[in-house]
Image 1 (cartoon, rainbow, N blue to C red):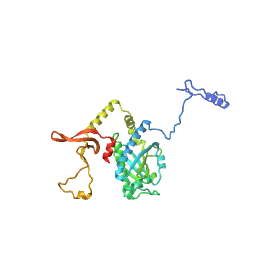
Image 2: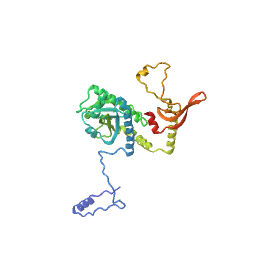
Image 3: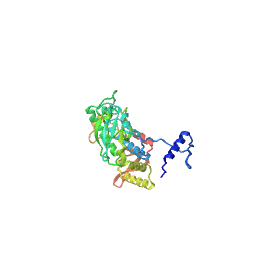
Image 4: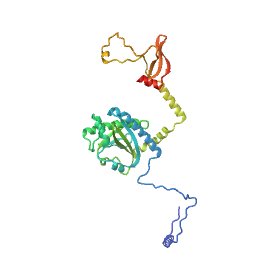
Length: 335
């Protein structure tokens, strides 16, 4: 423990400072003269490591791919979702960055304790509503609050996105996600105190020719119980030992070898008018465009793959593989 200065020693030091008699402090022996110092903002502590950020990026990229697969059949148009950013900021900064009005959904993250916020911009919401109601997916010139019917439509859209989120995270945690609240004013939504740190994930959402943004805000308090698992998930997804890679390859090969694929021999083609098809009778002969001396085409999974010769093997009809079809032959056969 350091010695405590007496009052006389304190007075001596003060008088030396006032007279300028103190010598310049010399650096400690062994100290690095080129020591690099970095600033640290205690109001915005960095609580998420690079490994955890990479794990979150992998999980939310999987979510974006899932949404890009699920929504095109539902909206009957091209849908593409791109992950644009993952940031760490305070909840107040997120709320102040959100325009009004907008579409915010408070999401229950069970079994994790706490809620998250899914925010969809008007440039995304109204083209989706227009597509659902049979329109072309046009956006409004000026944003407005949603009507009750539009609010119900967006709630259904959000539930579909939550299903995509649950499937993309199912290897890490089994979520039971639900919509707790829907609002248009971000100042009303208060899931944590303003100074609490959150993870803000930004997406760019393409619906046909319209482009909008979507943000997913989840407090660090909610993610804390699984941050270590997220880090391990990212490390495992990037590096596989040779033993694990071989076992994975063998398992995939066994599954692929058991897949049943339709194999069909195309005997020939013919073009008939609708009138000829209507007038067809039992016993009519329809000549094909193939010749008995020419090889036929063998389709595997609906795609032309081999040229074959028809024959018999014991009591069964069979084909003999002659050669593998080139790309030009496939294109000619398909056309």
